[in-house]
Length: 223
Ligand code: PRP
Image 1 (cartoon, helix red, strand yellow):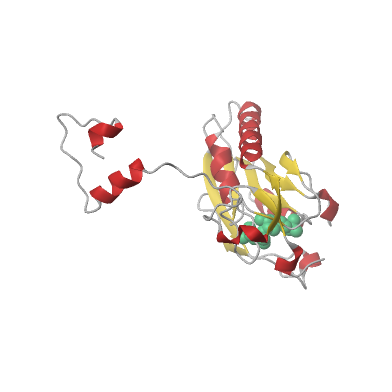
Image 2 (cartoon, protein in one colour):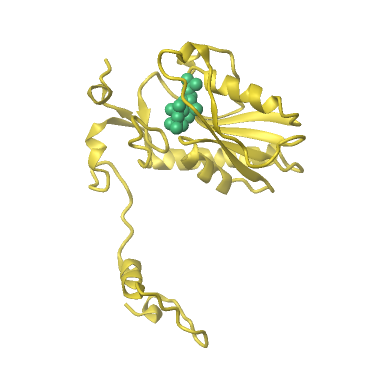
């Protein structure tokens, strides 16, 4: 397909040419294939027992949260602190729904491992790039489970002299809570199931699934 056939006009402009220009125009002519259960894009979709939250449900709810945060923080410029890795998808979509000035930073923390799970001891593997002193911080998480990670993060951020700190989490699993933490912006409350997709993993897999699904117990050796 030529560029003028797909509505791209470049009159009077030098033509963009790349070594892969033919491949690029071919890709433009391919229909976009949405991900869905049963598609061969996700070879491991058979590991999913059921879809808990569809792409559309997530899209709508995340847009609502973005709008709510934009209203609540009108006149302020919050710093979103996204917790790697699981919160990446949620963060990317949430921020596109936020209509006020804001900035984005990332933290990575080590998982505390099963044996020390109840201790809540975590280690910062990647710290924020910018100071958040006197800033309004919104921690962005994919899921709050026991709450131990969030408890640690809240302490850590509060100790930096912030103006305020709140929490936005896509999923909340209150039935698993081991510590009393409050989540200000919750996407969905979920039951005590092994959930994967939209950033959430099991052994680093399934993060790329566009929906949140329940993993078959035989996959993770549960139930
Ligand atoms: C998940 C999630 C939270 C934490 C919640 O991270 O992103 O940070 O667990 O669990 P908790 O409430 O019991 O502390 P994980 O350690 O799986 O790392 P990941 O984000 O890289 O997947």
